[in-house]
Length: 210
Image (cartoon, rainbow, N blue to C red; front, side, top):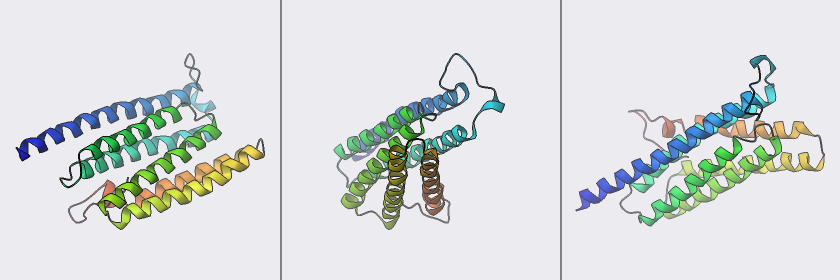
């Protein structure tokens, strides 16, 4: 009976993973479409006329879509398959992850609207930190999740300062690029610091991260 329950849970996780993969694929595709059409779907911008700023926003978004999808699928499997964890928690995990995925889809429409893009990522990182703090608290997970949360909150603080300045000083576009640079540093640090979680090897056991 227990083996059957595990089999059912594994099938559920595979199904949920498929839903997330579909939505993330659409977000990736839309990011590229918005980039090369300038959000005007009836035309295509020549490659030589693409602006460096929008390319940077699109690249950061693409990397984060992949990073969050890969990390969240690992977290979903790792914690959802934990026999000691109540199964209703799996529904909560999926709801948070799906909401994050939808936010990435929304962000893909805003790579030309830098302020909205940064605001979406601030909310996304706060949501992710709160969710992972709850996981860490309820599961007693390792220090890696704590490092991820601190990395997120530091990024949120810096991005919020730059975003607020850009709103107060109209036309201060440099502040939004600075916020994007903070997000890029947050992304790079996470990938480097928790590389064994994202890409575990035979000689390294996976650690928490998302």
